[in-house]
Length: 249
Length: 249
DNA sequence: AAATACAGGTTCAAATAATGAACCGCAAGA
DNA sequence: TCTTGCGGTTCATTATTTGAACCTGTATTT
Image 1 (cartoon, each protein chain N blue to C red):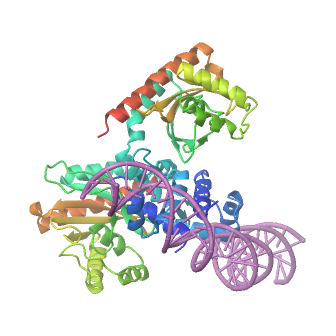
Image 2: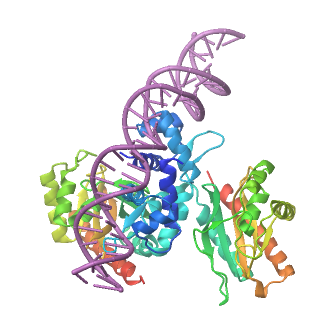
Image 3: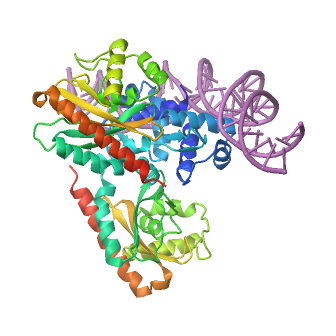
């Protein structure tokens, strides 16, 4: 892997932490030598992607991405266009709704609207969503060209819970079902006790750019309710796509 | 410069463009060999920091910073805390107000609230604000420890307009005046026809983290009005700091 | 109070990755 | 048809990255 790739992976590792991290730990986490990690951190800090706490000497994500994100969103306001739909859907179904976007070879959560109920699913911002083990991932996969689906099915499939489907053949079936239905359902494949339904947000070309997903505790879901939620999610996702691509110059 | 630094500078160059750019052009812009630029772009694209238009083959800023920015803002909600103050100030003074943050060795605009007036100053998101030639920069400088001020004054000072102050001694005077007064005033030093007033947003330690600035067309400003605006900006900046540092865990 | 452990940070010879001139193939314009 | 300029690639040369061992300061243990 190139130096740049390694540095960006280090940044990625830091971004997935919710607290500051020391040099030794971050080097171990990114499987880099301490000296190498330090050089990368210094370089990243120079550009504002990382910052070091002056007191504790620990490192954390810096402010530079905020600037870049504002620029990106001025041209491609995906989150701001989608936010009202996410909120409306969360209110309609009374469950946590999250939006993910494909970027850097994976799907990551970029917006969350929590359910108003006390017992609700918590989704972390920035979490990478594995294609085979989440409703969002399946919804995304299902609308990819078949050669890209096959390529994704060849990747090793990590097990996240007792219910994770890790057989390529079984995943292929789920993907086909999702494509036919228009939305996906994932039962506890990522986290026990959570069932999700998701629909892709499609570009005019037909290519998915991300997913909209509802995550509910299994305790209050039935098959019928999930199908209903799935349909509503599909409608909302289509609404996002229409507004996002319609409003652009 | 390290490979990482070069790649991040390339990313920075791309971010400052408001349209897509081709390989040859971006290589020239970043003063890199075409082959080198391509390798960097591929690496940056793998991680989602850059994306290539499938049709035109041109490159643009990717979606990865959006994810990182959301994570950063969940912990340090500088923009979202400041936004209401920015808006209120814009309404109060009837001019364009912008917020900048120090990151990666420079001050960049991260939020803008346009004046409601037809004749208004346009501030671009993401624009780097030179310390010596903008009100924001002077406000930031003025509250730095004196050794850091001196270091900044030793940097070469670019001329942006006929009115840009480029003499270190003259800038030092402006900085001293700003420190005494609590806010800065910059008359057409960055762009002709624009006069600005700015105040720093200070951390509890006393270190500035960014600036709040009002930019008005010279045509409708008087010295008295700018002083009034300056005071209001100072109050708003202090409000941001109080809320930002008060609300944190 | 001395000893230990471990943190952040640095050094420099050895190992590896970055570099760029020259190249290819293609498409638009002359 | 020929030329120009684009995106993209190649590979011998060159410069950068690498990491074991090293400092130094500070908690923690004995």
